[in-house]
Length: 368
Length: 130
Image 1 (tube, rainbow over the protein chains, first blue to last red):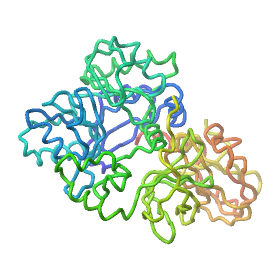
Image 2 (image 1 turned 90 degrees about the horizontal axis):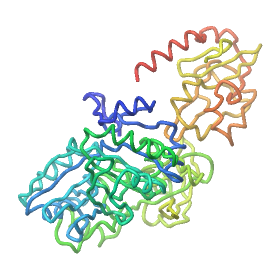
Image 3 (image 1 turned 45 degrees about the vertical axis):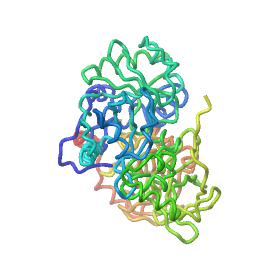
Image 4 (image 1 turned 180 degrees about the vertical axis):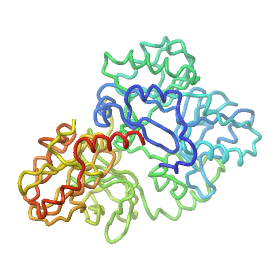
């Protein structure tokens, strides 16, 4: 995900705040982002047991407006946005005409004529160009990333911490729903979404209020043990929850069906970009599938490592330690005939084959 | 911070020489750069190593880092406590989390390594590049 150091790194409005907290910074898709503050393991644990605060302002926003808004969203994404109610969001895929991923995204319905797409940071300009190029519905599309900062408050205590800074009742906001209201005096979109496998919220607001909200949230969460968390913990948390990461599990060569995301492919909704390719693949059957695995010794199968299963090759898309499970886990594409849970596979690690076993996904599911 | 009796490499290993035996570890700077260490793979006792050769790996949550021996010789002892407690490398990199002891084949090789003052200024220039 690192890009060549040609263009200057892009910064969120909280760059100075991260540095003053002593964050270790990293180039993530062209953005100068915090990798970790106190350490990935302690940040991961905080989110699983208490709460963590993430700056995810690098994420892109694309707004679609006008009478043709729904038609455009329906055409470029595979999930059925016609089923969304105002104040509801869903996970979806921005599709190529081959039925593969330009990006994955969240679609928020503001009104019948206004949708907000939250897309990956490093893809946002490409996504916007793609949406515009497919805009036959005469909708208005805005590349709005610069108008939003975004913070993620995640963990079992996230709700009570955020509630201490807002009069908006958070309890009635259901998972994958959102509302508008003030947090700490700042107008926000408050969504009950996240990328950690825990309960939590993502709030979107004008970047000029970033430092105030960041600092006051950190302060409000301190007694409950909330700490700032970086992209390192965001990755280990989403991997335990088996959520896909663009450029790893999904990209322009993978389809939703192969990635186990058939549930976001609503072929019955009408025609959309890539629907024929996806329907054809569904009919013909999958050659390969995304599976989860756990290592059977102490070695770690990481992103990009080769996998061998019953004489066939596969590839690890994401792999690493699962701090809460005390195991080393990963996801990989393997031939469909060798994808059953319990199948023994081998991961090639620096020239040696290490044993692993296919397990059910997700690796981690919250109990609270 | 960096013990005066150690010698240091550009790859951030340290070596402490007692007679014909060198004890090798990674520096505090190296463990900070790696972050939380979760796995250490060390060579077998008896392995013959040449100076500059990779002899194992240390893995953090995020990264894999090879470790290189500053001197040639035979592995006399490995720190097997690190197999079950690799996090010691974060807590005490210059002490109890040493990696291997090597029976030196050429004591003069260590003369080319940095002393503590040289390593500290080297680390300062590395940090600036970040």
